[in-house]
Length: 319
Ligand SMILES: [Mn+2]
Image (cartoon, rainbow, N blue to C red):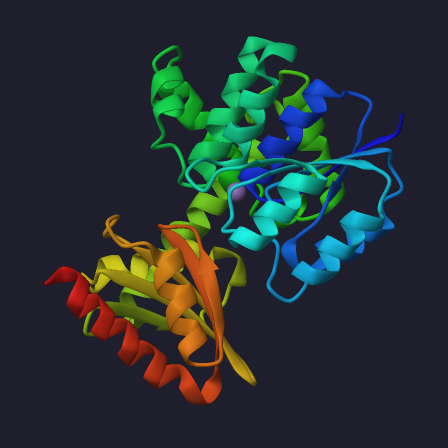
């Protein structure tokens, strides 16, 4: 039986993929992303397909449901991105669905396969959870106590930061990481990854200095625009909040007809997924993500109104 793992290429996706590969060592591993998932799923010829950490976009949802209906393959889907009720019901009926908004994809898939893989693979679940800011769960808090958490933090930092450097940009290099983790190796065992993490952390501290000079405050939002180094949008957004002492930070890029906005918050009582998806929609844009890490695309002409509306909503929230 041919088994294919389709997973996301960020830390959580790599870890979830490694857990799947640990369970099915002969499977093929392919990386995908929300924008290309429909094509990748359609082209997949495996008898069994395991999908991890891929959000279903509004745009492709109907097409994906159609593909699922037509495909004879057994599909398992492990994910934590928002899913509307109708799509969820469809998936529940037609595929093996494991969905939970409050846990990382890595935790979801680990808990599903935990009796069929070595117990030490729980480390990978913890790396994925921390990498996606989803470690504040009862499960992660409990298992973290079984290990030297400082060593685990070293490993997750190696992975999260190491994959940011050019050497690990390619899917082939990321697949090597998935294979290594699935066999019980740690991120720091992957040749070059720890040095890559050091390189990335240097770049991140340099970025902090740049953000400190360039960030501007617009009421509750710290903003940096068009920074060089597109790969550090999350930290840039967070630093913009920090250096301006704002609730929210945004890293904004001009994309000719729209703005690409990465958002982080320092106030964990705010749900960025809800805030960004609802507000972006008011201005003909799209937005969303996770409670503490999100993004939006907003048409050029609506940016100021979008920011004003976010500030109004934050005013209400902090009252
Ligand atoms: Mn994830």
